[in-house]
Length: 248
Ligand SMILES: [Zn+2]
Image (cartoon, rainbow, N blue to C red):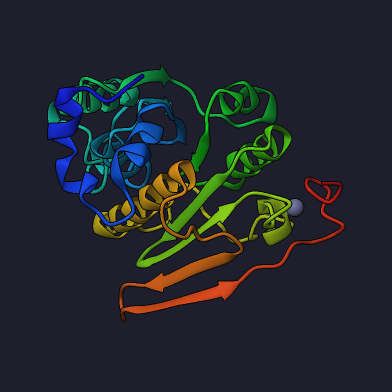
């Protein structure tokens, strides 16, 4: 697909970014991102990838919209409470940018066999899931398919972000050999603006990985605490004996 006159108008303010240009825009237009869970974190990832002009989004999200989703799920209209979450997500993205192709998957990718066929059709994987079962499945599918994965996680006022692409970087299992024992999938606190800020940063990393623009967070993790505005980066190392990526 080539750029249209409307593309040149719609994306004029980013085409003028130094080092961005038409070639970068065209790469985005011909790219597909898989986003797993499209709530407080994945919603802004999807919206800003659509805003940037990505060609296709594959979005996986299950369940029914509840009132306690509404402090962070900014793609959902209030009158959709009680309806399938995936419907509000697709509707919002289509209204915002009809040119973006959206493939909706109304389930969670909680094992490798579910995740892998979707990962295979994506150029980048964005992990915005709240639990380790799905994170591990997605990371393993990304390793098997050789796809880069944007790994974003938040809790309360904190955010963590990195780009995983073994063997250049660790995989998720290198970083977390086992889930933290105290992790409460359904009860951890979220301030919507914190998950939203992380979603924006994750979208930037996805754009960089897809286009070669900028310097992605490969082998480094951004860790921040918005309560005290502390931002730091730590270097990451692979586990050579990792059961998922050790043989790469
Ligand atoms: Zn690994």
